[in-house]
Image (tube, rainbow, N blue to C red; front, side, top):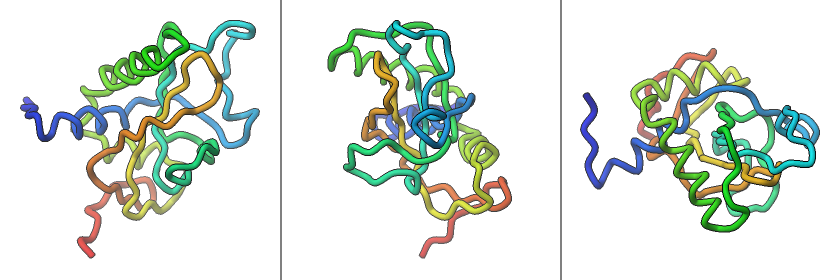
Length: 154
């Protein structure tokens, strides 16, 4: 059983986030949610991108496929409170996957090599555009041939 403390609960929540899987995509058309919500608000959708897939602080959309995504059943309010609810829903859904985050991320990435990258949570709520949450795993991930390995210290 994993015990959470105030110091590591944020890390636990995010690591878990990094573990849910469906698909995202690379360009604007492919990076859209594939659903029948045309004319309706996009439901709260969680996406985990590695740090090499976006420029931190940029308003640009992340590049490539999220390593993990999950669409929830509904959209929340189209305001900051709704964005926070969506973020919290994403965190709730992934918490149970924390212990296997490295394996899940490495198995889900479309690259042969991931070296010292962090996983970041993005959300969609109402709009079909990814919004950064500034929530990140408190560790770096290293993968080779879709298998995790311990990142070197230096």
